[in-house]
Image 1: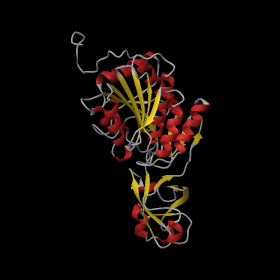
Image 2: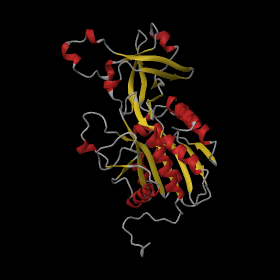
Image 3: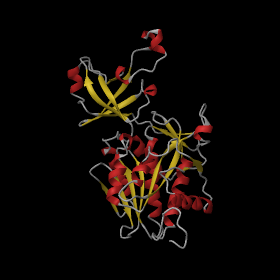
Image 4: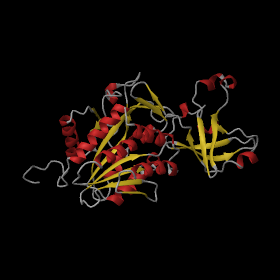
Length: 361
């Protein structure tokens, strides 16, 4: 289990509201925590929060975990005061009806629930079809448009109501584990490294707007200009029914973080991670992305400026992009250890060009 201070931070981070493009609350939680051990902490114009260790070193290592969450945005208020919305990020529409939400407004949070036509009133053919988002609405308990407009405005962001829970011996359930659990790993790695003597500069970034196009990683990596970049995201746990292992691999909660081999992952950096894992007996799971490239901050980090040596470290996640994702804190702890020891071992003189012989280095 995590230290109480870290667990408190994780709960605050997961319970914050921060749909893509509206991460202010989440960034504030992140800044406050990082200031306890980083040399410098700042939030940039896009909403990324950056904590820095050993900034005088020329060789820069970047860690990135995105802290935005999927959500919604208000687009229309009808005469009865019901709110219609659009998705903000890749929402699974099958899980949306009945979700408790909060609308973030200038005056504070407005609670509500996402409604749809009752099952009893649906035609037989309709009962077997997923309800489209345009046929759902948000009910905030008002009686007309005028009353609703006193509370909310068009464009206000909507997030799932906070629902953090520890379940079982080692697991956490919450909205937004994709990818605040990764942002948490970044923060805890910074905290661990702050107690070590470092030969490299370390920039830990909670990135914004990942769910709408990897935008925060694009700008923050350009600004930092690192030689090495680690993205920490969630990966699919396949230890649930009807997941084809022959297509997605055998990946279990509690068996360690996933180490990826794909075009987004530098071969030399990947070997370094695996050597550290063996040296410190850190359990890890091997995986291959279900597509050749893209989908995480790793891709944008890698392609910044003249190119960055990147690696993706993933925390296995059940029920991704639903209001109740589940991860295992043992995987989190092992990911922090792996990243901490890998970065602490760097001298700043490494080269990550694939295929060079020792004579060429």
